[in-house]
Amino acid sequence: MNFEIREMKNLTGAKARVYSVILDGEENTLLEQFFNENVEYLDDLKKVLYKIRVMAQNTGCRKSFFKEGEGAWADGMVALQDTGHLRLYGIYFHDAVILLGSGGHKPPGVVAYEDHPPLNAKAQQMKAVAKEIYRMITEKELKVHEDGTLEVF
Image (cartoon, rainbow, N blue to C red; front, side, top):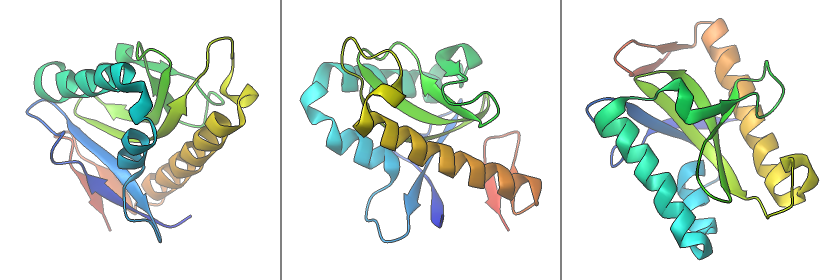
C-alpha cells in the first residue's frame, strides 16, 4: 500500500497535530474523503469536527477520546468516540499526534462494522494503513516525535 502522510494544517492546533494519508492515485486525504462522503450526516460530522478541534486546540489527544481494539487488539486502529452514528478510524500515537483516516456511517442496529459492508471496507482500509505505519516505525522509516511531528526517512 502506497500513501503519503499529510498534516491537516487546518485542523492542527497548539495541543495536537492532526494527520491523514493520501493514497496513491487519489486527490484527497482519507480524512477529506470521510467528510465529503458523509455530508448527509451533518449533525454527526459537526460532532466529529468539534472533537478534533478540541483535541488540537485545548486538550491534546487523550486516549479516553478513542475506542481501542476497534479492529483486532494488535492492529493499532482506534475509533473516535461519541460521534453519533459516524465512525472515524485512525491511529493513536500519543497526546500530541493522531492520524485520522477513513470511516463512515454505522446504521442503527449494526453491532460490528464487519456486519455492514461499506463500513467494513473503510475499516479494512484503515487497518492496512495502520499496519504499514507500524511497519515504517519498526523499520525506522518513520519517527513520531514528542511534539507531534512525524518524520519520514
